[in-house]
Image 1 (spheres, rainbow, N blue to C red):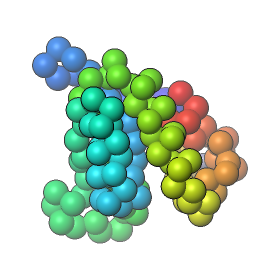
Image 2 (image 1 turned 135 degrees about the vertical axis):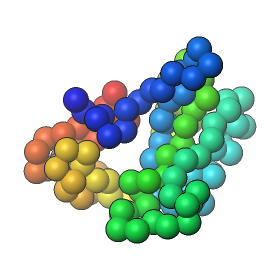
Image 3 (image 1 turned 90 degrees about the vertical axis):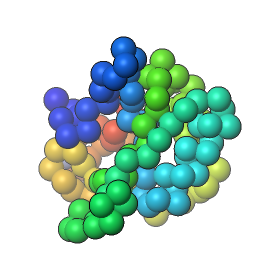
Image 4 (image 1 turned 135 degrees about the horizontal axis):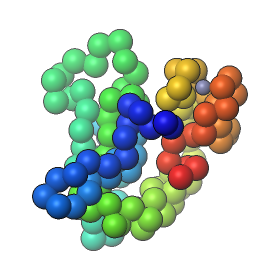
Length: 122
Ligand SMILES: [Zn+2]
């Protein structure tokens, strides 16, 4: 499936926690969480900072922002889109889930295997 490593939902306490954003670094992750909380949605961060070791994985592969209630997902995506467009970072690349190729941010799908870009295409 498209999100075999980054499955979008987990069942907890009868509600769904949704992975809403993959951050390039902790500063960015915290900014997203702040934006979501300002919008009245609870969110938390998971990632390698917990262990203090990033290892060989790029940070964007291991820092995730999770929405506490997946029913807020649509609104959260809007906030994140606003957040990203306001930041205007044209060099932000993303890594393909399927073939691990790094793809320029202006592309909506992997140029190597055609895998859709996560989140933008759901
Ligand atoms: Zn690919």
